[in-house]
Image (cartoon, rainbow, N blue to C red; front, side, top):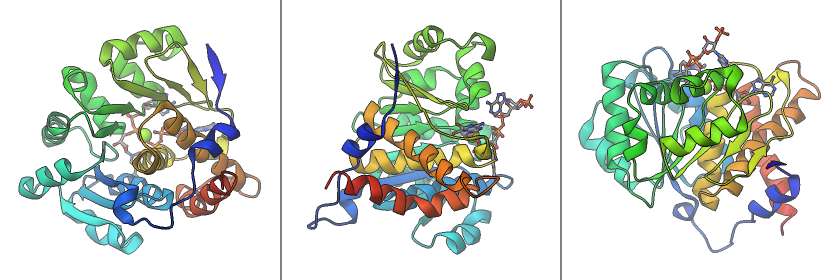
Length: 283
Ligand SMILES: NC(=O)C1=CN([C@@H]2O[C@H](COP(=O)(O)OP(=O)(O)OC[C@H]3O[C@@H](n4cnc5c(N)ncnc54)[C@H](OP(=O)(O)O)[C@@H]3O)[C@@H](O)[C@H]2O)[C@@H](O)CC1
Ligand SMILES: Nc1ncnc2c1ncn2[C@@H]1O[C@H](COP(=O)(O)OP(=O)(O)O)[C@@H](O)[C@H]1O
Ligand SMILES: [Mg+2]
């Protein structure tokens, strides 16, 4: 059954912060990605995650990206993703691990995906995006064997690679069937001009918002960061994933009222205000 995500559901999910709380109450997120060529992708994901309200953020990336990362968001901690002795404890300590934006598909990238997916346990959530989806398409057991709660965020070509279903044949029934084959505890955020969210139930959720100004590189990396920030604070459920998808497009639509193209950085900067509006509806 197809249902629209509603503003009311989002407002119910985004509860105001408790006065007696501190950073560790809002989730530890580790973002892994960004090679020499695609550092921007992991920086945009981290910036969106920060602006969504995650408590503590660490970025494991190529060291060439460190200066740019810290110029943009000094709030984020940095790990050189080649440093196993730092990376492994960071994976174990995280509530949420994002893997893939700007990671590339080299043998080293494959080893990183393996390290993350194998180390994660049931209490953790892994958001698999971009290059990590392309890598997993060649190695489907990685997703199947991963114990963490899984959120997959492919665009239609990444989903074609992962599921084997051609874009033209990506019906709701096909998508649900292929998702269940990949993992019995994964949620699928299938991105398009009208993104849909599939879990292991027969209900499919459709995002009613978004605009073509959002068709720009980095917009999916930004969504991934928002999903990470929302599930870090409010738990990993279909509701929280839906809320993140909705907030991303809601913010994009606000910007498109004046702007021809919706820049990912601008969307990120508007997020704290938009999320506050939704949290106040709940106060
Ligand atoms: N600033 C940065 O650092 C950025 C870095 N990035 C990083 O780049 C890496 C590669 O990721 P990617 O998504 O760019 O490339 P890929 O996986 O090959 O997919 C593109 C192919 O799929 C096809 N296609 C069909 N339908 C489609 C759809 N709905 N949406 C999109 N594509 C669709 C399309 O077909 P075409 O239009 O060419 O016929 C094309 O052939 C990854 O690590 C990512 O994080 C980006 O995030 C950008 C900003
Ligand atoms: N025409 C459109 N209308 C609404 N949303 C769009 C449109 N085009 C792209 N988007 C959104 O932009 C994002 C693109 O994700 P993705 O292709 O992974 O980008 P990138 O990897 O460059 O960050 C998705 O969230 C998608 O829903
Ligand atoms: Mg992408």
